[in-house]
Image (cartoon, rainbow, N blue to C red; front, side, top):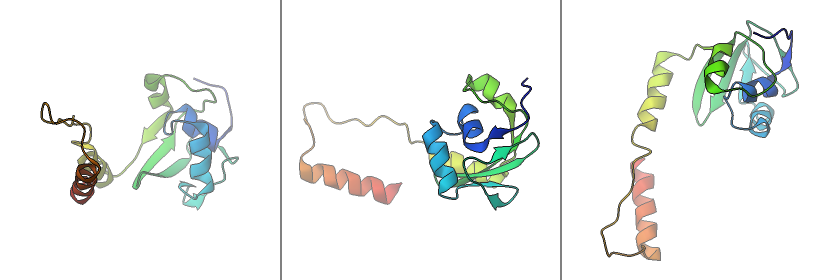
Length: 131
């Protein structure tokens, strides 16, 4: 697809849509959440095809193999062809179990109005204990 030999790791993570922004990708590298072949990487470090990346994101450990190098952000279908997801099955299951039910719509009884400060705190406490 591309004829690049090397790309900055933060740029690549952003362009293949692993992180929403390049700043978030850079911060993840700086805080030690990105490893290449078991070693911590700086945001400016370059990657090549075939490199293995470990990314810790939202408490989950993802593993990716670099298949193709791109510098610009592209659509999701194209981005998915640039890496191979090698995340272990149990880690994916953990992620899916956490994600299920998160997007459910919350409803309040008709005519109940907005929750009071006390009710809101009770709701937040309940959610925190439950999830």
